[in-house]
Image (cartoon, rainbow, N blue to C red; front, side):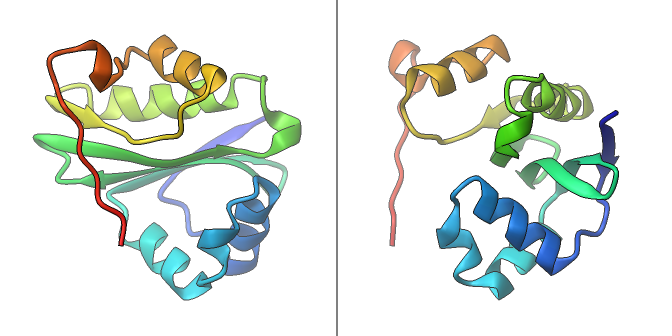
Length: 135
């Protein structure tokens, strides 16, 4: 049974192991930054099986006019079991009155399908334009 938690403290080793399990090594190369990013998030919804972290989504922003959905991840052996969908639904329900819900992700058919299923539209299909700048 999957247990969902909001803003539960996550031990550094659990977080590092989890991010590594999905191949997000750029985050775990600077563990201090990862821990600070999670701690400074507006909201973190995590999914647990027993004491194992199996899913996580972070929300940043002001929580009133804009949220940015960041780092939605699911442990590989729990993918395709609706964990990501449940994480996203919890975020969208919590912030349903927020006008702008934004995310930036890679372009793959399964990723596009996941976000479109959650009601998101790609900026290239609407009247918006998206910009980003990496350091």
